[in-house]
Image (cartoon, rainbow, N blue to C red):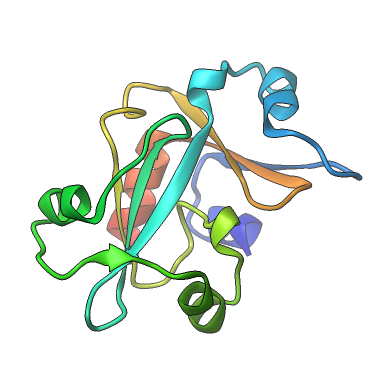
Length: 142
């Protein structure tokens, strides 16, 4: 799904896969990124079940109140695991920063200055992408 999205939208990103379970820290070393470049995509939903994604450093957290302020909304709540699975068919732990149709994505200031960042897509698959490419994908998606 992610590889197809990258290719169709001519985004500069790469899915790195391993034959066995691999820690994200080991992947960061392999692709020559510091631990500060490890990121996560935190999904929120509004009362219409539209997704709003905040991309931030793995070391950071975000509350619903902060997400509402970032997106200028009042009804955002953290997406629940069963909502994510039933609506998207993916595990919330591995929520992608791109390729969620109709989602609005914002790159948080905690990670915005990094040239490339790393996401876990599963225990074996990882995405390396520039924050500018996530923003480009958001523009294509809206």
